[in-house]
Length: 263
Image 1: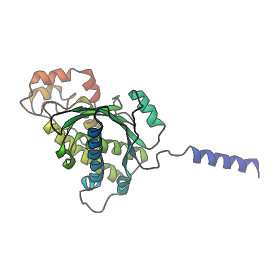
Image 2: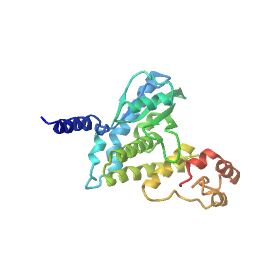
Image 3: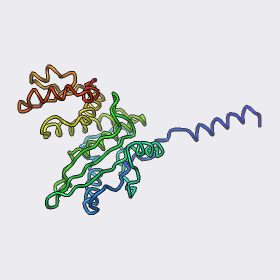
Image 4: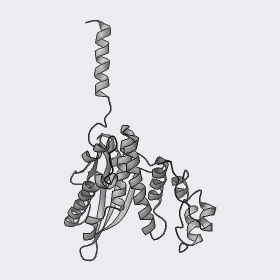
């Protein structure tokens, strides 16, 4: 065999060994939450229900299903047992060593009244939210019996956002990505309406990224404070009940300005 042909075989072997890593099914790596084990198992059941409902929620019976739509059916949340990742940097390194992980999910559970409890969930993403935002998003959710029937919450939003970012990295169908983003935008609109005041900065940054991916702009409010500060906060005062001083104080935050500079 000639040296030239041998060299080509070597190059082909290198290409195979170093080819795209993200070829398997996308998954979120779930580590045990701190707190009550029984309540954590309930939360796992809620998350499993979210995943089971995803296809119906995203495609809503529309036909035909967009190209790459079947990719959604292979998505999973995998339990990895005891949480051995002490901080976000360790979680990011763990993701880097596991090619198909779209997020590491960790958290803490606090007991509530009766069957309800509060879950603080920390999603460490496989990539940063644009415009210099961190890869870590923490959400707070009240979990109770009614949550099994609810699929319009912040956990579902984060799952959809992770899937949309992963679909872009994989170069999947624009129609599939658009379906994920449209569903995520609908959840963001619901969360914003239910919020007692502005959404958390991380969720506002995700909103800016989602609407940017749809080729639209975040909604503008009509109150004077928003007209003054709308370059920083696209909808910080959703109603007259939220005063101008609150809007101004949020606008003064450099963290919020960085998160929403492109809104």
